[in-house]
Image 1 (cartoon, rainbow, N blue to C red):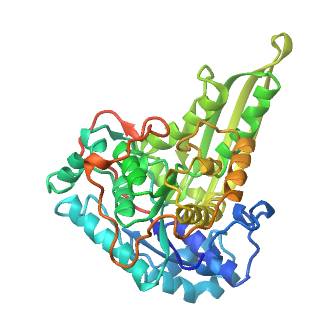
Image 2 (tube, rainbow, N blue to C red):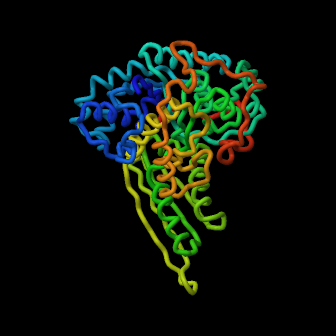
Image 3 (cartoon, rainbow, N blue to C red):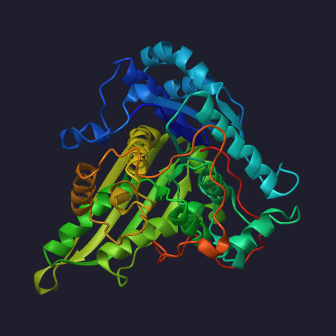
Length: 433
């Protein structure tokens, strides 16, 4: 598959910068593809874009040059300095393709004006580089859940609200999901933000025959939970409580220090554990911002469980890692897999990509072993069929389908990223993380 675009929302954040440096290093054979799931032997023969065929662009609301951000990450121990030096020219080229993102605090006018500009950015990128397709991946800051509105379930109501300069009906993540669909792109939400999980956006994806995946990339503590929780179930051991503490710094720590911003992340983690162990397990979880930790993240868990004859025991574990290093290769994997699904004519939520997420759409399967089998079986079944459906080209993205032709499907996941209360003009900003 030649000519695949990767459009990053939050393109100058830590995860995006690490992914771009990693992609450039992989192309130059400077590093091994450690952490890249799609480089495992099980994916041999799967029609995925080659590293050399992926062109990167993106949106961001900050203007720190990508090369400068990479220098900061190198100083933090995320990027080897030899790799930084070898990829500097490539970083400058990618930085030239990053456009101003959408920020509700600085945008003036109707949201549809922002949509038109952002769609033009992506379609011009696709046309300029002669790309077959573009995958939009959201790696921006986590947003809080949003209040449910009628516009989130009805396209005609949504489009009327988008045209109203007094309304801000979509949070930034969902606005970017809408932009991706309008531009004819697959969409991946690597965050727990509302994103594509509004019903109207799911319906649009189905009607426009576009794939999407999400949500909330699974990189550390939750990855361990999806391995360990099934162990207790398989051994008929009764988990009484599972408490967790997350310590982190950097932009992610600062963002999640706000309880409102952290709500979506905590809900995402809690839903996964409840699905694995049932609703009756006490599972307190909190996140602490520790600026001194920088890009490092530490998670400590205490599991209390009961054995034969009521014997009480416990398991404790600590996970310390560099989250962007764990996340970045998954972003590249998801871009390749979503592009392959688009080429194969698949549309709607990609349940087979649950392997990568804490709160996967379209499936309640959270056990890592079963998710692994689902992913590899699905990948081996991909057929590289460029003619399955007409693909958008140049600057002519598909228009939104008429509201009366939307293909309604059962909503994937639970909650749709919707919360309760609040005004629709007070929604979270999409700064990079």
